[in-house]
Image (cartoon, rainbow, N blue to C red; front, side, top):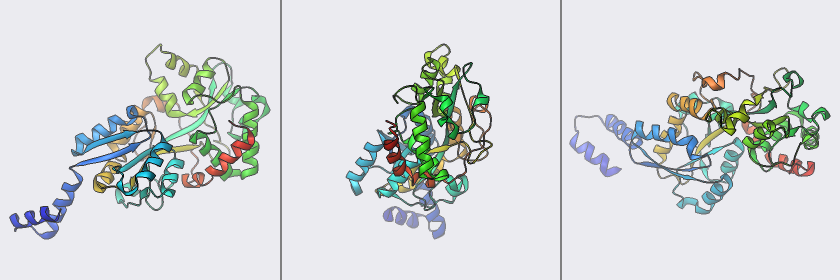
Length: 349
């Protein structure tokens, strides 16, 4: 880099030093490559990464894997890790990565302006890039939405044998229970978890899509799932099994008249402590928080943009607006360990 600047200064005596440094900094952010470790499915993020490369010329190298495995890999590789960016889902995983020492703080006025404070780390270790809601989905024709009200009410005995939900090992459920702990305290949160276990129609199994499919198949009447899975099912080919299953349910926005609001979470990213391409890494995260990428998140992934002023897709807009819980996500994250222990005591497998 010093030799590069020296050649510029030698050949461009008419430029000011400040001008030369500005040109060099711009070049540093619009060349080279960036290496990503990603938990997110490649099909969800590849359009975003391709758009970034097309705009900046920066090559993106992607390694996909399971969240826990990628974190352990980063810890094992240490300073020798080739990863520049960790891209993952759920604030809990981002907080774990920060605690493990595999992320570094970065400051970006662009990111601070684009991303609401509750969706980013207050020290700059991670930034939320898209928002999803985790809500009940009810069987059309078998459940009157007037029967639904809050997350808390799902533990009512009237739903005995009628709820499908995935395993407690899933981080999305851990964050949901952590939100309960933050709002009501551990005792009430555990009572809620026990109530949900008592109301399960079957032993937890499969992913969020499987819960929606189970409602469509009549195995249960209520599923708890993330909205973007539902969106992708509705966008499947007409007549497909996934599309038919999605068309048999509707989402319900809980806690609109009660404390809190809809439980939301994020996908997000952080720059690794080992990043050799730090400028490119920051440029990538800034791009993903920018209007173009946020529109892609909305239109192709069916998530809610984290950036204000970007419209959701027509498909998502059809579900209607909702009041989201505005508690900072980092508050939920700190209770995830407690949530795991409560799940174990409640028998939520």
